[in-house]
Structure formats: structure tokens, C-alpha cells
Amino acid sequence: MYSNGKNVAHSGQGRLAGNLIAFAVFFILFLGCLYSLSFWTLENAWIPGISCFVLAILAFGIPQHILGMSDKNPSKTASQRD
Picture 1 (cartoon, rainbow, N blue to C red):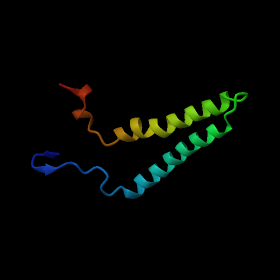
Picture 2: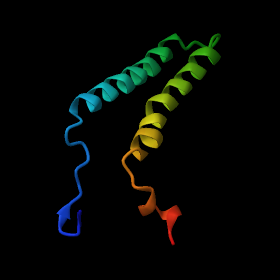
Picture 3: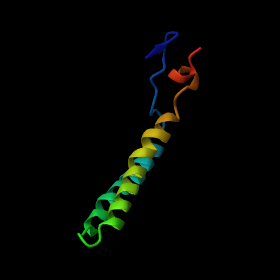
Picture 4: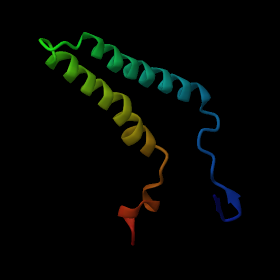
């Protein structure tokens, strides 16, 4: 994307270590979600099911809704139209 003749598509440049750490944390949460399903039985379904659901929300929701919005300019979003 270009703005005023300058390339503004610079997401991820110079942020390799932070990106790798974030990926590792959320991938571990996802693996914990899958591991919690190994305790699923017909007699004991609530605790593994709820823990899987919570870990899945953390593993997918935080990167999509919190980390994904950190580099957006609020003046360019749809809710800030003038």
C-alpha cells in the first residue's frame, strides 16, 4: 500500500522476536486446548470441555482481537468516518 508516494505496508518489520514469542505462547495455549480433550469421558465431560473452550478462546481471540488491532490507525477505521 502506498500513501503520499511512500510504502506504508511495513507490518512485521523489525518485530521478529516479539512475533515468535507471541506465536509460541498462543500455540502452547492451543496445544493445551487439544491436550485437555484427552481427559474427556462420558462421565467427566464438563471440566475438559470448559477448559478446552476457554483455552481456544484465549488462543484465537487474543491474537485476532487484541494483537491484531495494535497497529491500526484509529482515524482510518470505519467507525471513525467524518
